[in-house]
Image 1 (cartoon, helix red, strand yellow):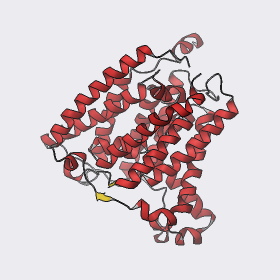
Image 2 (cartoon, rainbow over the protein chains, first blue to last red):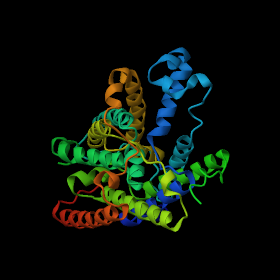
Image 3 (cartoon, each protein chain N blue to C red):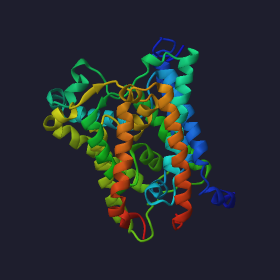
Length: 178
Length: 196
């Protein structure tokens, strides 16, 4: 059993098959809800809820949090994307478990120490969190779901994310390759 | 006719149940495609693994064509689908910031959740930082609000902007995609293999 699992560890789907399945899922999502998929929406809801719980007055009067009409008793966690994200974590766990990939570890290139990798991951997360709010969505919500219905902004954000990463990849190569 | 929730064929409560299943499929597909591994994801920028761009472009293409056909057949009301609004300035600058986040952190928010789900500590750290990043954004929001709303073009599509039909745009996009798939496979053969 463990031998069989070992063998499947690095076997992923053919990317074109994965892309096709993701495309079908996007179609189904638009057919059912009229909107696309998302990943940062739930994170935003969680941040709003946390701030609201700690300091309700601040949340009601701050320029950012007041946008979400907290004074009307709305619960930001009562949101489609929150439920979708809970499902995402479960689905990813299922796939990983079936292939024997579930394990606590820090993945890093051999020449980069674990703690360095974690520092880079936290810098990346900070930037992505900030950027996704400014652009009104991340790779899933803006780029993927936007492009699926031909949104101009979706294509611009997609080009900006990948274009920037390609342009600056040379300067950050030491993080990833020898 | 779809979208089902728009025409009231599915109640809000069921919609949330469906959300969990859609999310599960989303997470499963991403993890099975290898998106829980930052080293696999980042391969796209150094030429040793092009899975990201192949999955991403194939998914976009399948979704664009599928939704257009469903519109033609009258299975879905294409005009009520949510078109992500375009704010030129924030879409570009936000994308640039996310591009830096991607190349430094090795994940995007969706993929970091997949990594978190299978126990990758770097995925946990990225996700926690994501929360902090959004919180910092909320603090500086009053100062950057004018830029956030700059260049509002509304819910415009790329075919409207280029003044061509949806079908023609999709045709050219499909041709470009095939060219990208070909070029990436050529590059892949030339770049030194990276084991991870």
